[in-house]
Image (cartoon, rainbow, N blue to C red; front, side, top):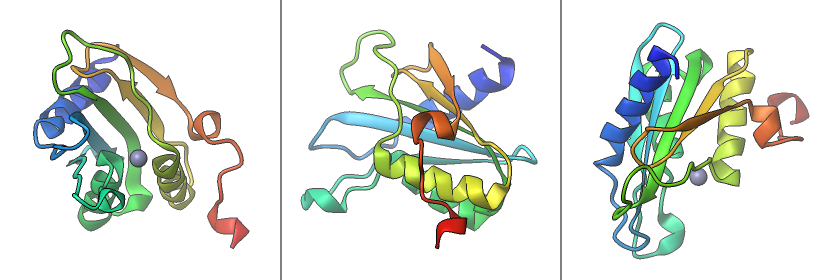
Length: 143
Ligand SMILES: [Zn+2]
């Protein structure tokens, strides 16, 4: 792994520690890095009314918009797994809704966003592009 990927995955692990997921016990952390190096974090936040829960990526995208704008995102790292995961566990990827949310940001950026998908402790990862994860995504030009 590249040094910057490792750093971002560690920040995502930091975020994961703040997840609120008493229903699924599946804790996810997300770290988003801007083109100027600034980083914002997010973790999943569940609710007794399940549909009100928020994914870590969506929480982090909101923080990105407030901090540096979604048009300045360079890369996104996510980590996650069951709370009781022993070792690294399996790699996770964003859900379909989050893939579409990342598509919105990428359309604003005008450049590909690197998507780094990690396991529970960030010890392993895979790298993806948005078209690979969400072919045919809705974009700004389709409105
Ligand atoms: Zn999601």
